[in-house]
Amino acid sequence: MPRKKPNPRARKERLRLKEKAANKGKRSHQRRPSPAFAAEQSMSPGLAMAALGISALSSMERST
Image: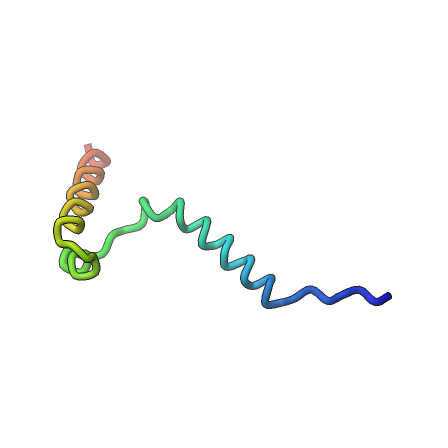
């Protein structure tokens, strides 16, 4: 009985998922977009400000 060929689409999907999982861990280290852009993107301005505050704090901690 001939062997079934591997599905190339399934392989691509697996690769994509793996990359997605890898990027999830990196997200905190990525450079964030400008404050205005982040505020526009997020649903509530309060959330955006909180996120910016956190990022500002972490960058300050890094610089010291």
